[in-house]
Length: 309
Length: 100
Image (cartoon, rainbow over all chains, first blue to last red; front, top):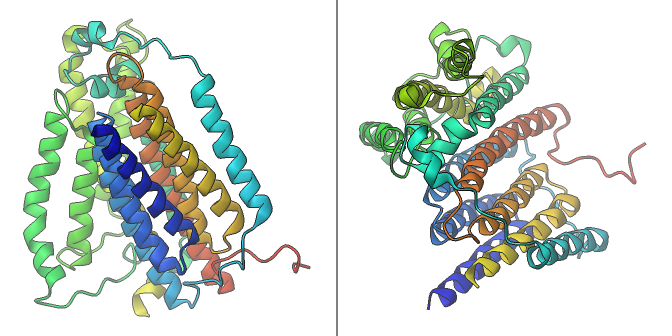
């Protein structure tokens, strides 16, 4: 029974992915891509990876979907929303794709089953009860620190694309919301609920499903809904508070790592007695940075032309 | 058995993504295909990490990191595509055969 469910789910995932690649029209492809992310999240839940399922649904389907929809709307205003699809099958590309898929399929059967590292016995020393959070913020904190810096670098990359004259303009395009419409009502109704849920995900992530990334994404979504409904005004690059929010996560993380090194434990090596409190502080700072950075990545660079048109 | 189904789905997703990345002209579609490759690899990796007695937390943590990095890369790519369209009026790269 469960195998039949997995087979059907994988067929759906592949079908929707095929429609994303082969379907006519860029807009339709974006819609299929969002659907694909949601089906994939169900797949992650079937694999027992609930933290990944949350991240995929919130980031892979949700935020990436908003990003692509907004980009398509802007391109359409520039008459660049669509390009004629290629006629027929591109044979070299098809061979490359099929070769890649076959090689990976072969690798699955050829690779030996790896020995699972024993996280359960190390978990009590990590300070948290959720093994994924323990890996993210303690055992492999180095990866997460660099990831938070990658987010920052990507945001700088997006901002650099602004034209000089637009630099002091409000961030992102102008959003139109009908007063009294669905979006405006949602913009007032959803943020309080989303705020509670996002903070809960971060707090619960220490011991149960959730974490700074999933919670931060929910908070970013709250900000986006409020922005798109024109409930809050879009910020500007020059806001000191905004800049502080973007760097506080990596800064606190880096500082914690350096302090640990200063006390002789080694860079980013948390002493077990303090681990819980240090992780909570890092997660709180990281959540602020993740939420603000993700939202700013999605709304894009300051664009005055996008506002007047 | 289910793990094999998910892993082979991941492999097929990578293949689809590679095809689209090479064959589709519109850059927004190429960004989606880049994401298909990424998520296909994550699925393959996640299925491989679930083969042991318990679900392994390390692949899960790495995949969450990967999903966030994929979004950052996509946001930067979208920014570049919009900047290109603003400059040239097209969201597709010029055909190599016809380029001077």
